[in-house]
Image (cartoon, rainbow, N blue to C red; front, side):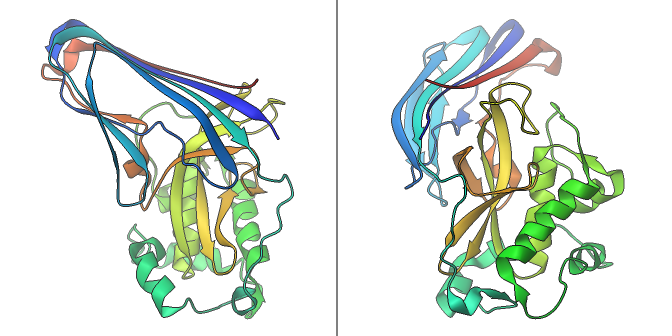
Length: 288
């Protein structure tokens, strides 16, 4: 199983010295049975006071507070992980959930809560009609249905990298016919939620040693995908950008109901908009 290093650098340049507001950092990967975190270092300049906590989803969150004015802010995380997920995973789905539709237990349904409810308005039922095309029969195989939805997104939507902030809504992605990995993930999550599945958005990194996967022009990059809760198997990762299932090449950092909740770096400064000259992000993912 590969050992991987991730270096993630975010740098802001300002035209004048500005005071910085608190910055919320989600950069530390989530440890699972398939991912062993062997080291994590966080370097921030200017020096910051850092408080660690876990949010409601169990994500590690660092809050950086600053006491000085500055013309530059640099945030650099260096991570080493061991990836242990099989390339061809077998998911022990419970017999009661092997065919769709199925019913979550009352406890699961209560705990899933908003994760099983669409987050975008669809008053005309367009997304419902679109996703129904993938339900060939009732009952139908649950895992095959979820794979078909992911494959259908990749077949019908063109991938287009987008460095600007923000994410398209699912209907916007369907109308435009293109999107980034974030847009693919949101469309997939909303589609399966429409069918009654519990789903959460995941932000992290794509490990791409052969440089042959969509969403990365090098050996790795930041990435977004979805986990769907299926009884027996638990949270199953689906990467609609690459038509893949499982986490053999995925490094999760944060999970949430909405993609906006898992941004790697968010924060503010006190000044004019024109004071921000540039923001540069560099991510290096490689095997060691």
